[in-house]
Every structure is written in structure tokens, then in C-alpha cells.
Length: 95
Image 1 (cartoon, rainbow, N blue to C red):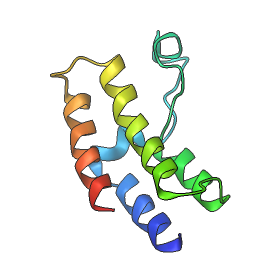
Image 2 (spheres, rainbow, N blue to C red):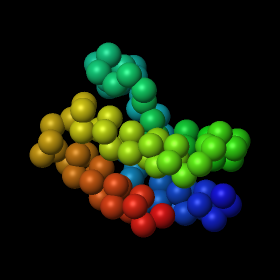
Image 3 (cartoon, helix red, strand yellow):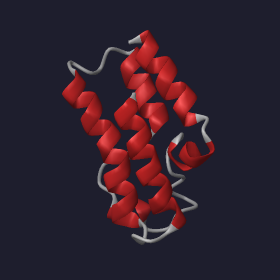
Image 4 (spheres, one colour):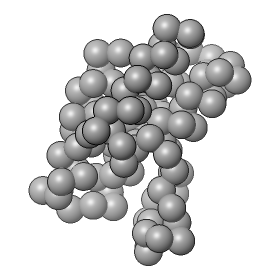
């Protein structure tokens, strides 16, 4: 878990992952809360990992995938942030 946590923390500092490192500011991003039922970000995943929330790898993978799903649900498919989410997905697959 420590190694995984360190890898996720390092990943969250990457430029392409910056938009996914912390929760979406619901006051600043109009409509996000109405569109995305279960917001997810790397900081929440790290907190859950440190708190032994995950019972297995599948649950952790689900939350990682949820970041990407939420991004693609809210943003246009060809937007910059959607492309960043695809880079994040590739990087998460390597962790």
C-alpha cells in the first residue's frame, strides 16, 4: 500500500494529472454536481488507501476508472481535459 500510495502521489503531481489531483470545485464548475453523481479524484483515492478503505484491487481500480468516466461524462470528448484523462488512464494502468 505504501508503494502504491507513493506512486499515486507522484502521479498526482504530473502536469497532465493536475485537474484530477483534487476535488472539482463545485462552486466554480457550474453543473458538475448535477451531472456527476459520484465525484472522484486522486486525493480522495489516496485518503481511502491510507485509511484501508479498499478491500481489494478491484475496488481501487473502480475508483481510478471513475475519475476518467466522470471526466468524459462532463467534458467534450475532444477537449484538452478529456485527452488528459486518457493520459491519466494510461498512467494509472501502469501503477
